[in-house]
Image 1 (cartoon, rainbow over the protein chains, first blue to last red):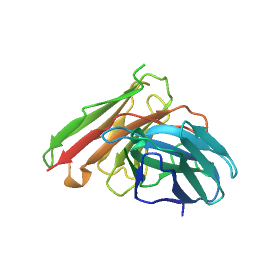
Image 2 (spheres, rainbow over the protein chains, first blue to last red):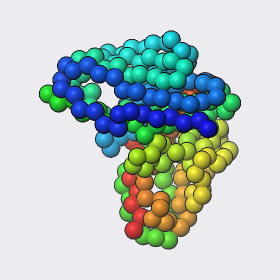
Image 3 (tube, rainbow over the protein chains, first blue to last red):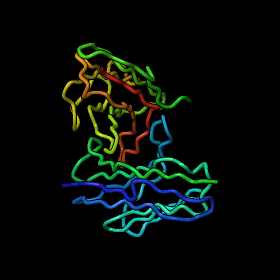
Image 4 (cartoon, rainbow over the protein chains, first blue to last red):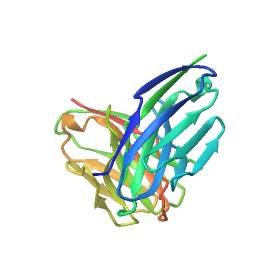
Length: 112
Length: 113
């Protein structure tokens, strides 16, 4: 069965302290792996799509990487404004637009 | 360009009452979705639509109905609300091409007492 597990559930960092969030997935055939950022009281905001193992994408202090079993969201020298919940989702090649598997997220808190 | 908007932002219902949540998008997206988000769980798909006049069931459709009379609007209805439907509801839209990157609205927080 397709599933997504994110760890840790919560992460506290000091400003400037780099770290990584993990998204482990099980899917018979990966169409795409998505990262979203969700601020409190708001909807998820799209960050990245990764398609195949070895692929990397960057945006400001965020860098997403993908292997055959997991994806990492690396945060370099985070700032307080990076505090949010980060969601991971996968889509199976067998299905189309109606099947996204979302993880429950990692809540990141960056203290000044 | 407002993206995806949802109304209302908050609502409290009593068990058995009905209501409609409205979603509107101005990106000319073909596909639209309704999700619910509960603590400790990932987003779960309730219903979706591939175009004007079409709707289909997602992962958790029971107790909900939807309509898409216009391309830009997607309505979610609760005919007889139950406490188990207390949740945050998100609407999303996407283009019809893979990988179907979704753009979300700000959400509606619904409490059923």
